[in-house]
Image (tube, rainbow over all chains, first blue to last red; front, top):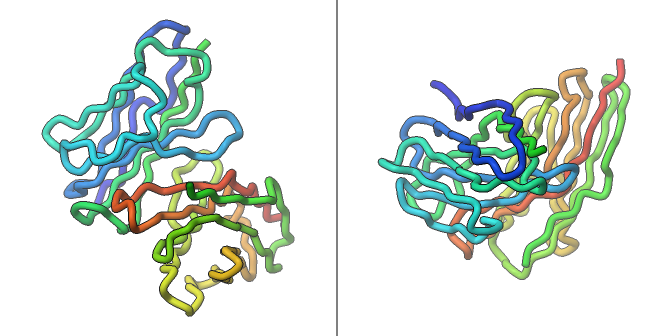
Length: 116
Length: 116
């Protein structure tokens, strides 16, 4: 069974540009989460999808961030326009149980975003 | 708001010895889950061990065990017979049940180096 995959693994962009990160969860996992870790700090929750619906987006930092999960399969996280403080590692995770999940979350390898 | 604190940024241990990583948390919830995740260098994060707060018995997974002290809000990870492959960053994480979203709240991480 394939694990959670993320693309790209690294992205280097200039301030003001747009970047789109992609996450493919484990097949059949309804729950999809985005987290990020900025330099040296703790990993922070961004948002949670149940299928194609946003269950909790309380962690999204501002309206420059847009997450989608059309069709309830893969998800994208777009940052537009990117700022220096957006640099960090963006993790995606998925889990199996429906609704509010306490099932184990399986993490992808992360996308390292550098904004210059 | 819930918080998770890992007070040891870095630790080292000799191969075959035992090491304990500390984690404390703060919450007003009575039911929750606690996790230890491991991220080896350049690899993705994987679950090491999971503890349900309503269970008094400490969770164990092979060489990994926890010391869960609910009243003290402490959740330490003990690694016995340390192996070189245990070298990684370890994250302690909390998941409240009342929010029903499965959101994980992470500590800052502890980098563990196992020395030959």
